[in-house]
Length: 412
Ligand SMILES: Cc1cc2nc3c(=O)[nH]c(=O)nc-3n(C[C@H](O)[C@H](O)[C@H](O)COP(=O)(O)OP(=O)(O)OC[C@H]3O[C@@H](n4cnc5c(N)ncnc54)[C@H](O)[C@@H]3O)c2cc1C
Image 1: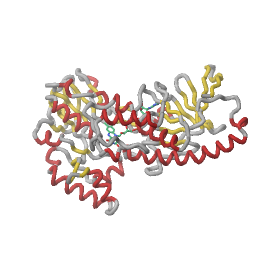
Image 2 (image 1 turned 90 degrees about the vertical axis):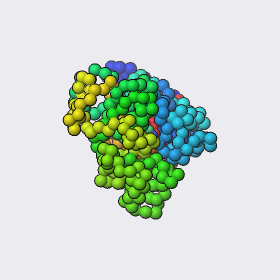
Image 3 (image 1 turned 60 degrees about the horizontal axis):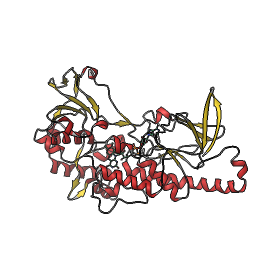
């Protein structure tokens, strides 16, 4: 690594010049793009705030989690899941796959390096990426901090009054900690459903708050994953017809979910996903627990009290604990400065499939709302784009090295 020090605002800054791209985040997206670059002979440097790769999966998911989609839709470029892995790998299997992926491509992120700010130096046309102790500089900045960087915690009236524990699903590990407890689960997406199911299996008493409408689909139809059926049908049929088909089968196999307090949105599941990013819930068993009354469905919360909650329908109940299954949000606006490429919510303004490329060497990977499939597509596109520039610069550098690398020294 090339380093030089200079004073800025009176403070010494350690400046490190990175020849290849700087990637922020060592989740699946950061690793996938580093691997694709490596395959093309382009080195890169990953900065990761935690002390491990795939920290979302290692540190912020529950024990019982399995991939929601079949493994062929979740593998990263150039390395498949092991043959002996089941169709829906467990969390531990996914983590071991990610670890072997990093090993296979010799990817070694710098850990415990929180990116505090990143900004384009408009005069010199390179990105300045600041962490607590260093400033890393490169022509290319790849944002791989994910759609789920921070927990999303909505305002809920009275929540500060509640005397029991209030946790987000990112801290939930297992229902074994909640045996015989009355638990209020706020949210009915995939996490809310699966946490409620896990609580049931550990003899807790979950009450799940369903504020909005939600599409629930069986994870499999006719022995095939619902996702793969949808992907195949979309090749031949218009989206609305595919949605109609999915809903017909879902109603036939799951019954009318409206009757259970789970109202379906008017827009079909795929159309809704494309328009708003809202993922349909793939049922892995929660619905039968709702039918049997073990998971109680509650209308929206009016307010939280010291010992429980008052609901919109006038009911009032006591709870030992509250679990917020309220989702996640991107953290890009908190650290990426001086670009209008992202929305206020930290998502690229340009929709899929073109949201991976910004201006002046800015790229994003994993912000497609299409899970790991979207990550792979972004990673391949980015590597293809950067390698062209890399070859031009390398050619130029070999002919006049002294002009390109003046007093800086470099690691990559
Ligand atoms: C419970 C759950 C289940 C899921 N199941 C599936 C599934 O089955 N299939 C599927 O395709 N997708 C699934 N997803 C979607 C999920 O987003 C992807 O699986 C995947 O983790 C996304 O990878 P990523 O690298 O884009 O983001 P992340 O995995 O979130 O990685 C981003 C990394 O960036 C780091 N970071 C953030 N901010 C900074 C900073 N300022 N400085 C340095 N580092 C930073 C984080 O620490 C993190 O390690 C699931 C998500 C959740 C929450």
